[in-house]
Image (cartoon, rainbow, N blue to C red):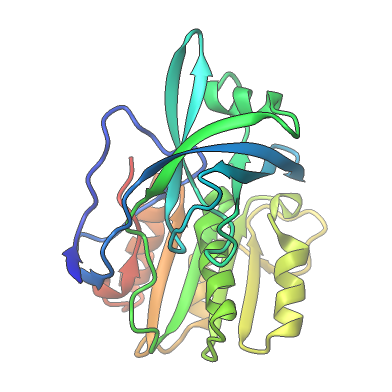
Length: 267
C-alpha cells in the first residue's frame, strides 16, 4: 500500500479524449502496476455520436493487459516518420483484459484523432499501459456518484462495469451531461443497466435540449436535485478542464466536503 497524491505528468503528453482531475489530497491505493509495451489489433469500430467513436483493440503481444478501473493507456501514433504519444482513458472493464475499449472524440486537424479515423478493423496499433491513479477508493463501503461530461464518461464506465462485476450492492449514481441529446454516449447501455440493476441510477442531463424530455441544465444542478445526503458518498468527476473546475466549485458551495471530490490532475 502507498499514499498517492497528485500524479506526475509525463512531458509533452496530453490526454485528448477528456481531462480528468484528482484532488491534491492523499488516498490509500494499491501499488501501481508497471507499464508495459503492447501490440494490439483493431477489432471493432463503432460510432457513438456524430463525432465520437468507440474503438476496441484485441491485445496480441502480450495477450492481456491487467489494469484497474479508471486507468489509461498511451497510444503510439505514427506521424510524419515520428511517434506522437497520446493518452486515453480505458472505457472497458478490468475483467476483460484481452481487449481494451477507447472512447475518442474527433478533433478537426488533430494528429491522433485523424489517425484513429483512418484506422480499419484488422489494423495494428502500438500502446503502453496501464497508467494513472484515478482509482476507486478502497474499501468500497460508500455510495459512488459519477459525474461526467462528453467523453469523460469513459473511465467512469469502466468503474461502473467493475462495480457490478464484483456484485457491489450499494447505490451507484451516474450523472451524465451533454449539450445535445444526440451526444449522450452509451445511452442505450446505461438505460439497460438501470433497468437490470435497481441500485444503478442513471440521470442524463442535456443543457441545450431540442426534443429532450429528461433533466435539463447542467449536471451540478442535477446533483443538487438528486443527491441531498453527502455522508456516505464519494464523487468521481471527469470531463473538460474548465467544466470540471466549475462543477467542483459548485459542489463545494452546496456543502460537499472537498475530500469527497476525486478527479485526476491532467492539463
